Image (cartoon, rainbow, N blue to C red):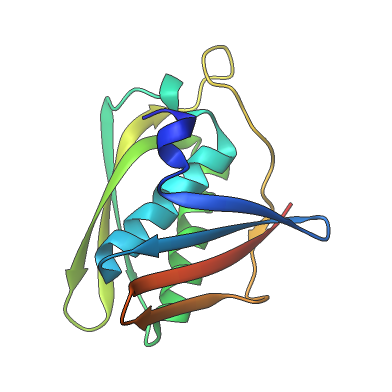
Length: 144
């Protein structure tokens, strides 16, 4: 998937020294999948990432807002602590407000992967996750 194809999944915006994304999707699971892809795209140029390894994480929260925050925080830790970057993701909704996220990627290699910039944290500032007649949408701001 190229950066142009990423543009159909999410939109980046600047926010007073921070970085934000806006997402829209037809389903709840697809919204969370697109959020995972967006984060990977903000961290590295995904076109150079090979899907040779698979990782799975499960995130559970009472509210979709917390689910989005916690999912992206877990994914950010996966990159910063374990050095794993993903090219693609799939999301399955589980019982009890949980998401099972399967990531396909590889260990980050600075000689092959283009690092786009540091993200320190996922914030709750202006965080939105909502369902409407037009589908699901979200807005997330990252501390950079």
